[in-house]
Length: 570
Picture 1 (cartoon, helix red, strand yellow):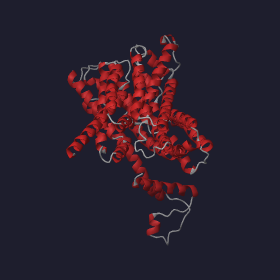
Picture 2 (picture 1 turned 180 degrees about the horizontal axis):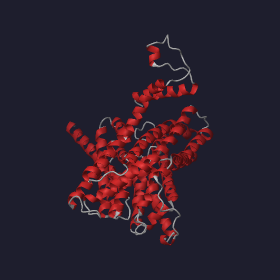
Picture 3 (picture 1 turned 90 degrees about the vertical axis):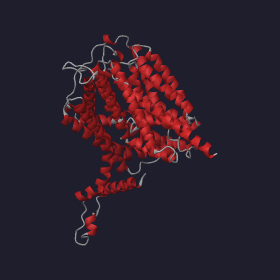
Picture 4 (picture 1 turned 120 degrees about the vertical axis):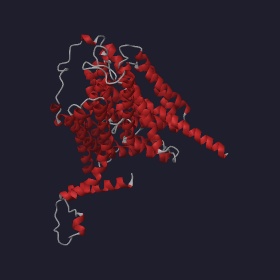
């Protein structure tokens, strides 16, 4: 933790203490101006709250401001300037963006104070107080239940409307009639990934071997599904789900557990011990979703024969997406995770909960933050992405209202440039990537600088998103793109050293944050509907393997440069 972070955390702890015990807190003016004249009161004044909270809140809010505002402004300006179209319901979208930023700020703060103390305590104590079976069982439950609390998982709720039920009937069926199966499959996949990650610590498995052993069967199952026309449309959704799961809840909780298990297994001196679990958490869900699709095809031979879902065509107005409904949904998402952590802490680890007031504050703030974020997602982020996706085709394709704005080559080029800038900007603004860059620079003693990692990942994501957009525009099959991209990643994995393999594969997970995922998902679905595609999935999948390849290539370059320098010195 940096010194500024320590300072803000201390000040906020003082504020909580002041509210709890309702004791005197003397302001700066009281101490230095008229300490002898001003009576001491038992209440915390508004100016005191302002002085204690403002430094803390401003730092947290600015993180979200840097991640959200540039993307929103770029989408709006591109739509207005390049595509000559107005942003519909601009005031409502602006409100939604504010709700997203405030909600994320509160949610991440709630995770820090309400969930992380549990996970850190359990991670360091459970391996010494429980059997390996207990540790693995908890790992599975933690990974699975944390998935339901991911903010971006809510983006799947609106995905069914962007799928053509005639051209992709089983995909439409999975998203509209059986969405619980989809989310359950993703949760089970993440749970199994965490279990395998724990086994890696227990047995000292190499990350390179584990990646190959996981990726090859996943690609084999994807190939099987790709040659079945009923399952082929599900491939994009399956691989996109891997990006959705690696968010601000799953990653820190799982890493805290992994660090504790690594320490218990005698790997606490390995600086790269924390890398790798994020990789597995993005591969296993793809495998699980394809298996669900196979089961659905066997269960429902003809989706057209099913009776329609009552109310399936009704779209709730924005005011019907009430804060109360979102609050209830947030409680249902976070409640089971809190209950699991508390039960394990109390009855398995055998320790009482300390600092209950602060933890209680964290839980309440996390629930409020998720409710506010989901509300902003529904009325701001997703509509903006849908509008951008639906408007982009006018650059190269004639519409019912008139001719295309530009010639076909120019319009396509403009569309791909738009995708590249969007992917690059979203990645550079991702706070998790900046934090990862600092860590990597320290661990490699400056051999892999922070800015080099950020640029490598950003270029990989940008080119991946452009490839995903081209897939939707030109109607390319998903299977060759996945096989080609991950074959390059597999070749780079075989060629690279162990530390760069773990770094490259985990870098794909940190780029898909709670803002980027729903925005890009909505963009793809809106674009797919506009160009008449059966579905608009796959952009997130392309954005995931892009940075793997780019970081592996940079790692090879760094090793080659070091080898040349060593030969010259020798």
